[in-house]
Image 1 (cartoon, helix red, strand yellow):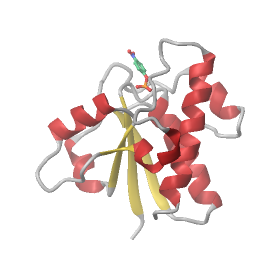
Image 2 (cartoon, protein in one colour):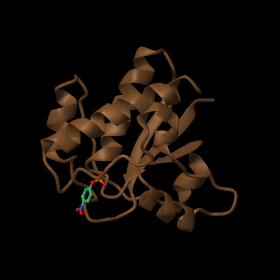
Image 3 (cartoon, helix red, strand yellow):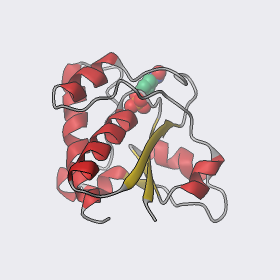
Image 4 (cartoon, protein in one colour):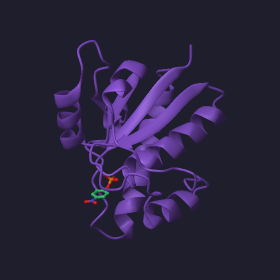
Length: 150
Ligand code: 4NP
């Protein structure tokens, strides 16, 4: 059966859709059949496309995020997904609080990037363009780390 992976951040418009697009592209390139999705712990941006800055940064490296739309994490996700990967410790805390019994155990995505020396993918929303490049670098690193485990 194909592994289902859910990436989670706060708004589902910057970090987790970037992770979804990057991981989907890299898994495809590696010939791994996985199901990839993303969601936010908050509902503010539900139905919206990813942030323009995240899209532009991803596009500069060939990742297309244009079809993605934000959604909120649901209880069902814990029962349907094999891996639920949080972008930061706040997301992880919120996910742990809503995890139903027997559901997938959320983890930090950067566990798969041990050389990064960071635990959290920093929230780039209120910062400048450089933050989005940093986020993309971390996500590419962790994606490769995750890929070798599948
Ligand atoms: P994300 O970034 O969690 O990586 O999607 C954010 C997006 C929106 C907000 C905060 C973070 N916001 O406050 O609306």
